[in-house]
Structure formats: C-alpha cells, structure tokens
Length: 67
Image (tube, rainbow, N blue to C red):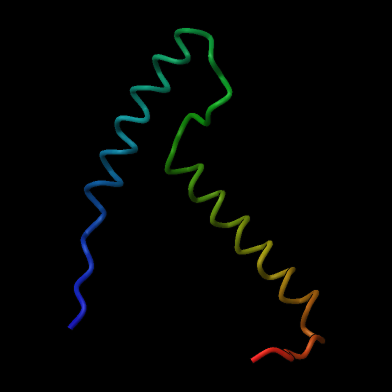
C-alpha cells in the first residue's frame, strides 16, 4: 500500500507565513506579489486547466506516431 504525506498543515503554514511576509512588504511599498497565496494558487490552477483544455482541443486531430 502506498502512503503519501499529509501536506495540509505544511500548505496552511506556508499561507500563514506568506501573509506575514506580504504584510511587511506592503509596509515597505512592495506590491508586486499577490496578497493571498491560497487565492493565487486557486486562480493559477483554474487558468492551467483552461490552458490544458485549449491545448487538447487544438491538437485533437493529431495522431500519435511515436511509441
């Protein structure tokens, strides 16, 4: 049986500390990073799915010739 590590706590702590760092960056006038790491990740994921769907649609008529 394969076991995978639980990454929920690591992801949650990353988001928490990212928020602290971004707050300090905002105090210093740095605005080029997203405010919310989790929201950014969700948006990135949605865009990646959209891009993949378009790529698949654009190549649907191609036949694989390399095995």
